[in-house]
Image (tube, rainbow, N blue to C red):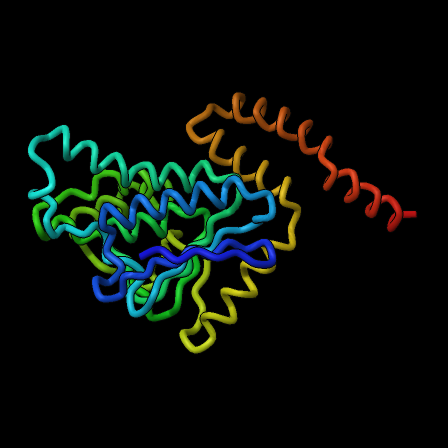
Length: 250
């Protein structure tokens, strides 16, 4: 259900349940969390690439048997928390997590994509939160979506269940890049290889600071920046970078 490999500093996590449109079962959620933790502990990893077996990226939470597996509200809270831990694992991961979306990313699957640090999509990809259409609530993913788009656009997407194109998702700031279908894989490889070529310590500190300052006042964010600035100066990558820069100037 989850395939994992790593090479050249890139960890590749693939959702592999195509017969169910890669819908997230409890077993998949547990496996996904395990490989995220594995990649986070591997110092050789510089970038994590999250992909899926075609045709769809992820249809969201697997609702089949949802009520049969839970007897009370505490059981449902526990199951929901397991999915929330995936979003937290991505946010806390020391490396950039890139979601590469082909086909549909819906509900929790859309949350999985937008919860990643960067999102690239094929031009035929679709994004949406259709939970309202079955009386469900896109609850946890709401926290992610409202950090990507305006509140009014977020509410419209959540309240109507509208499924939008990759082009529109890009236009409203939900995703980073849109690549032609025919060139999608090659463009994704170039994109993640470029990230993997950057300083690992710089990327890690940048990601940590960006999310650490979420919700801070301007003054508090500047203070956090002061400390990260000082830490960055002490890394081996920065030392070598400063030396190269100085030699070029001379």
